[in-house]
Image (cartoon, rainbow, N blue to C red; front, side):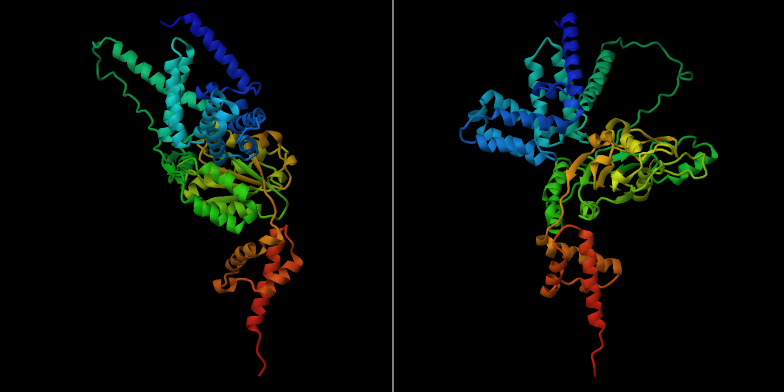
Length: 506
């Protein structure tokens, strides 16, 4: 039998350890992660990089494979590391871990990599983690750990079956499992209760309210109700959003990521690392989702154009919001009682695209005002991108919550120092390089096609550059600003037009 006093002591031990992990004071052990005790400071990527840095320093051997293993850990410790880096480190551990680190340490490190991969919804890793949780539950009887492992196993199993988990909140795994346990206990308690029930007058029995049905995998109800819909103003607003009200909207599915990658690298050959990192997030899930990200780079290096092209190739509708000079809360909507009342940008996108996962591109994020007199864009973004508050973010126009968990967030910035530190912690920052002279030909091809479309010209005008045109461009552009190159290409197109319309002498 379980001893109540022993269980209380175990629970207090687990709670104290969880507090240290949540506060960033203690790196969780592999078993902590297995039973969903939380990541270091609540951030999977911080946890993963910290572990990888420690693991790299543990590799001191000169034996065969040590150098490759150390490199694998160092890659995993870099900002922007994702599923590909995890699987590479895991495979290196399987190949060289026993020899370099010892069998016990290698097995622990492999399982930890599998746990990170499971957090990114990698199906084989999820299956392995569920099995390991159940094994640990059986191996540690008569302890509060048993319940922790069973709860975690049910949570991981839920993610394996239904997906929709974001890696920056491991505690959600435990909560999912706890919900299942509570439902099971209630059912068990009901089965043990006497079957005979006192007679109830049907005329006095209140009708049982139907339990809300969960969204099917791949769908999300973003707007469940509009406040005061029985009044004139509320009825008008409810009618305004009737296309999405109480309706599950689709979440964009993952398509051919290899084709997306090849196209992006062909058009933006200097962005291979950024492309791999973003697609690494998406490749682990059946539906498109990636961590909120800021692309940091010099002015004119193609950040905004990359964002737009990235979502276009994924088949995700996007909207660019220019943050420069924004000094109010218009992004997050205004209350309906004002004459200027209007919905938030996310709600507008849900209605326009009728999809639960549109993308918002926050252009020049660092240029938004920090003045809070009329509301702050930064404050709104904090609430919208925090996993828990995003599930029920309050829109002042409809006076009701929205589910923003399907939104895709991408920002661009020239200088990260002007972005509040608390928001920098919420977003992953990826360094976005600038193109070099070697990239001119492939970049010019894509830019010329864009210019022709913008001008409404026939596609024949976007024919490949001649050697003379390339030489002229290389003479004035040696890399850097894509914006400047586009201006030069407009000049090339003007010259082509002038040449085509020139009247030959008689």
